[in-house]
Length: 127
Image (tube, rainbow, N blue to C red):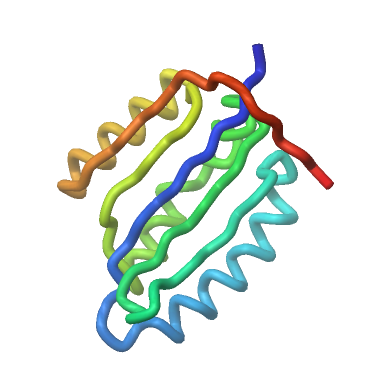
């Protein structure tokens, strides 16, 4: 069964890099919107202190998440100029490949990966 997946990535914004991160994210979002049509949502939020950011990704299913993750290593390297990983959360059941990649990335970054794979209900509206 195809079930939705929500992936939330948390970051610490490097000193004096908020404006550069905003520009990078906005430009990147335009590119991702065109290149990753099965990504339903790609949204960034910054805390009141402007020191932490969270990026919310929503996928219709694990296949859509896999497609979004293609090229993620390159995008991450560019993003790490502005921010540092601070933890990741996955809600839903990703593919084994995506889960393995995230576990390896979390270990390398020294951050926590929380996975709650059992979707029990609800709905995802596309409009």
